[in-house]
Amino acid sequence: MNIGVPMQHESPTSDSLAANWRCRPRVGVNTVRILLLAFAGLLSSMLVVSSAIAAPATVGLGTAGSFSVLAGSTVTNTGATTMFGDLGLSPGSSVTGAPVVLGQTHVSDAVAIEAKNALTTAYNDAAGRPTEGSAGTDLAGQTFTAGVRTASSSLLLSSGSVILDAQGDPNAVFIFQIGSTLITGSNTTVLLVNGAQACNVFWQVGSSVTLGTGTHFVGTVMAAETITANTAATIHGRLLAQTAAVNLDTNTITQSNCAIGATETATPQETAALEVTTSGGGSTTGATTPTTPSGTTATPTSAAPVVAPAVLAPLASRSTVNSRRAAAHRAAARRARRAAARRRARRAASIRRTQARPVRPSGRGSFTG
Image 1: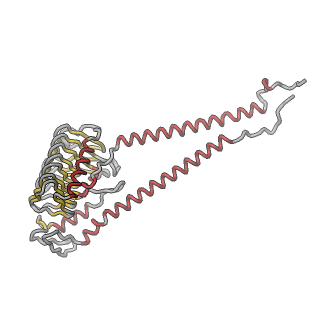
Image 2 (image 1 turned 180 degrees about the vertical axis):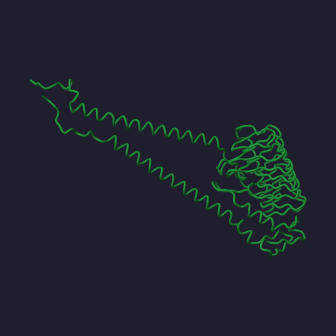
Image 3 (image 1 turned 120 degrees about the vertical axis):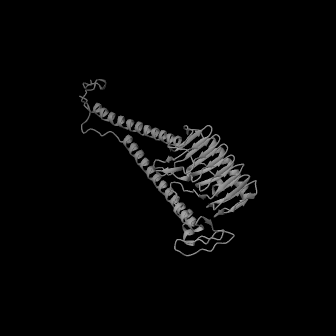
């Protein structure tokens, strides 16, 4: 007869119960770890989705992106106007006033037609974005962060300035949807702060645009009808009109191109080039002989302005610099992803080892009586 203590009545101090109690905390810890990891993954996904909603993607301009001016019916100019990108016109064929074009000129050719089609696509893209708030009726004194703002009818910059604040994000995108007209007063300014870039600013306008005398404007203007830049207005961006004219008067239109994650760097060089191509308010296509920053003269020709090689070199290398910065950004992102994958693999292996760890045997035998 077995006089030992039956198993169903084990002593609370027996080895088997002690072993069971030792296992339970370990299982509980693993369960908590798994739940925490799942919660962290869910939270990360929510943050990514929230970020995607808060930060609109840029508007793709396609082949229209190389144009400083693109019009539908005609391009007119008065005085010494200089544009650093291309000039395009389609289906119209009349360009008057001989603006200085440092890029290429395309009038009613295949390139201009393709660019106009790309403009239509970009215009519809910007117009179809969901709005994130109102732009009001007057931009004067306002500050906007990244996002899509809407003005149901006309939008005015009556005086002073409007501020576009990227809050430290060089890829922050600003889109303004304007139902009818956009008008700026004389000597008004669009200010970019905290990393904001002109290449990420878009003005989608339902009818016409008028930039006042001396206005310092920023961004890509996409108008359904006419764009008029009054005397001495400067634009860091593009003037793109779908169906009607672009009218210029002694304006400067510098390009706004930037690589992903990089800031625009061409403005100082463009300013220096402008000083070479114009002198004393005159155009290099006239009788004026411009001087370079070093004091030497550059002889103009009737075909195209002559710019000093020392000034053109930084402009020519801009795309190379931006490409290198973009490549470095992508390489850093790949390294970060690989490191994160290695950390996840180590955590998963650690969890598996913990779950598979056998119960440490007791040094004493089971009590059987």
